[in-house]
Amino acid sequence: MLSKKIKEALAGSSAIRAMFVEGKELAEKVGAENVFDYSLGNPATPVPDSFNSTVKELLDKEDSLVLHGYMSNSGYEDVRAAIADNLNRRFGTNFSLKNIVMTVGAAGGMNVIFKTVLDPGEEVIVFAPFFGEYRNYVANFDGVLIPVAPDYNTFQPDLDAFEKAVNEKTKAVIINTPNNPTGVVYSHATMKSIGEILLKKEKEFGKEIYLISDEPYRELVYGDVKENFLTKYYHNTLVGYSFSKSLSLPGERIGYIVVPDEVTEAEEMLSGLEVANRTLGFVNAPSLMQKAVAHLVEEKTNLTFYDKNRKVLYEGLKSLGFTCIKPEGAFYLWVKSPVEKEEEFVRTAKKYNLILVKGSAFGCGGYVRLAYCIAHEKVVRSLDAFAKLAEEYGLKGKGE
Image (cartoon, rainbow, N blue to C red):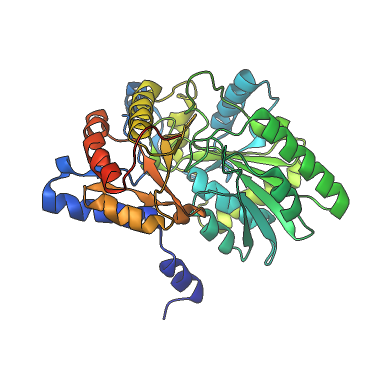
């Protein structure tokens, strides 16, 4: 007999993965070259050449008993120092290795954080639309996820709604910028206001409230948009990071948590994260990957590839009459459904071999997400299919 929790998880199983499976099934029927699968945020750029050469060199030169052995639950000291130095150089921070905990990707890091800070019944606020797995991460520790609707003109957070949502049960707030699924980058003004609201609410309720910044897309920003690091906006900020997107390493599950000295009782927090890393069964982040990424902290994936896809898809859909939010980061396009129930729109799109993900999977119905991390020629060819879809819904002129 399965547990109640896993039964609930099965019932709410990821719509993203479900559409990915549907895309595979469709490809078997009509040929993979004829399916335009925008479902899964799986990086389409190869790992940097230096990654492969670094791994080979590590395997050839390092003592295998050390390279593949246990280390501190926080990770190798030299790896954590390399990451701290990189962050300090880029963002003007003042971290040392003690501020860094290596994790099994950003997802593992989020679970480690919630294991450390969350008691049953406490609330975690998230800004819609949001990565759907946050529901499961919070539920793993019997927390309560509280979505806050966005400003639907900009898809920045609705700050008035946010301030009203913070109460004596609030333990944490999740920030994800650049955002999955919209590609929106939260502005300096937005982040400054969030920090001010949280500081006021901490004083009002006499308790710590943590801002958890989930940053797998930090390096994926376009045009004049600059990479940002959010610890400067609020003292009780914890940062979770993954190399999955920046180095195209999603299957290797490697990331880290940053705990600034400004966090209340920071040393106790770091000790708690270490224990959570161990007791959740991760024990430590993958040893070989730790050593590899320490040599690659200056590397970045090919942003030009994603930017070409972004421009072609955004401009192409706008010209067909679709309403789209212009992405400033990540590799997602957020498109308004031409009908109220976007599930119907998703089903209709499949007639033209287009695989989209419904917005309700991200806590925001009436929209769909397109992950444009696919081959450029497929993005270009998909516009003919989108044209037929637009015609079916009677779309005309330029979307907003």
